[in-house]
Image (cartoon, rainbow, N blue to C red; front, side, top):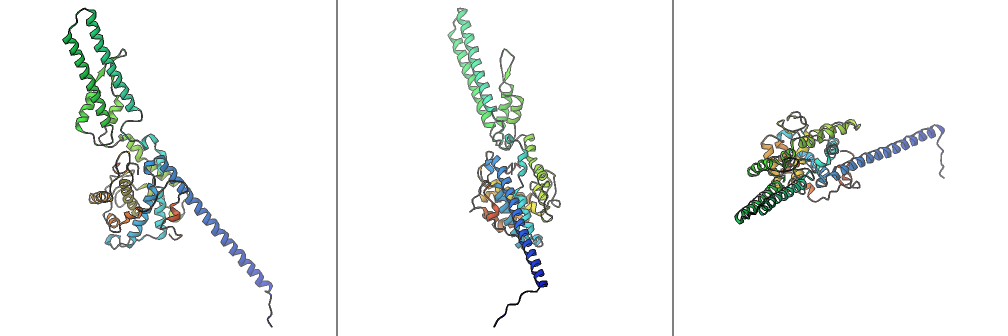
Amino acid sequence: MAYTLAFDSDINVLLQALASQAGIAIENTILQNDIKALFEGFVNASVAAIEQRDPTTSGHSFRVADLCFGLAESVSLSNLTRLRNSRFSDTEVRELRYAALLHDFGKVGVRESVLVKEKKLTAGSLENIQYRILLAKERLKTQSLSKQIAMFRNGGVDESRFAELDKQLAVDTDMLDEFYRTIVEANEPSMLEEDNREMLDRINAYRMESQDGDLSIITPEELYLLSIAKGSLSPSERKEIESHVVHTQNFLNHIPWTKEFSNVPTIAAAHHEKLDGTGYPYGMTESEIPLPSKIMTICDIYDALTTSDRPYKPAMTAERAIDILVDESKRGLIDTDLVQVFIDAKVFTIIDTKEYSTSPEFSCFSHHPCDVDLHDDSHGRHD
């Protein structure tokens, strides 16, 4: 016959204490998971807000995060001599991922008119120039007709003189049409041809008579913008675009990162630095740039070159983008060994089969391969 023995009072106290501690542990775990989910939701929403300002870069930050994960993982498996001791812990990979997701957050500090600028001229400028040219044509016609009317009034109708005035009007009108074609061509974010540069000087020198004085076809500011040698940004606009990196670091510095993620602002702030010191914003050299930032630079360039067409450049093939990465590594701008690992491990194929979205509901954390608890304008201009 079996008997059930009751726990004595001392054991009851111990069990109650154990149950209490277990309850606290469970509650803490739930709270930590909620905090993690809240923070990661904030990160995703932030990235979505950034990229919706510039639809042409949709999904860029998520793709860069995936590429960074793939390259960091490949570096840890690499047998290259210089990288043999470069092994990323799961926490370091996660730190890099946060930095990659938020590396362009500073775009919120850049004027939208600059951020999404497609052509050299600012919005509305080309239409204003077109109106001035139409006005110049009308004034030429008025001047020609006035001279012909004066000839009638003076009683001396000279057919050859009439024909000469009509011919001169046609020549002057054709010249204005050529001016406009040149302006439209020069407005494209491509290399400024020497012929167009000379024509812009002619256009700038052209004056049309007015009761208020002579008027120009283009303003000094419009001439300055149309004379941009390459791309669509003036030097001051390019500086503003480049300032997004500083804005990113300032924003990330306001987040109370835990100790294991304390380098996120530093990593994100160096993704436009170059090994020879020609990058921005700080002109850091090879020894000063963190290895995770070097990884992000390569991934950022590749995605900027290969993903959907931008207003200022068409998308490139993977082969062409890789050629550019190799060329830049040979020129001492980006890390040669990391580029080699990127190619050998075919890291770039990670993003080929995925769908990327900037919707706040989208979470790269929910499907990302490293989602475990252990763990200029030369290219894309804005990236």
